[in-house]
Image (tube, rainbow, N blue to C red; front, top):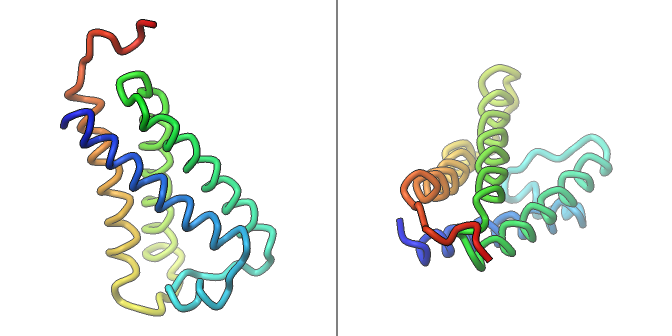
Length: 134
């Protein structure tokens, strides 16, 4: 994967996380319900998650400017998306939460998988000579 391709993957990841973070931060329960996202029992969980997603979004966007120098940011993003995907699968298959729509699970996990694959492929194949030089 080229540097420009991973830059677009990272920016799409940042926009997605920012959108989700803002929705959770402002606790737009009507929109969350329309999208099929589970609503938290108390607002504080949604607010904290929204803040974390906004922070991740800003970090990934900043890293997209120079992907060869953002290897740590890519690793953090990959770990975050893997944990999110596993959490979704755990909640659905082990805990047994009800999903309001049949497309929610494949869409939620699919988005996580796409970001992980794009960023991981770049990490594994790109070996720029100037990755850490000033």
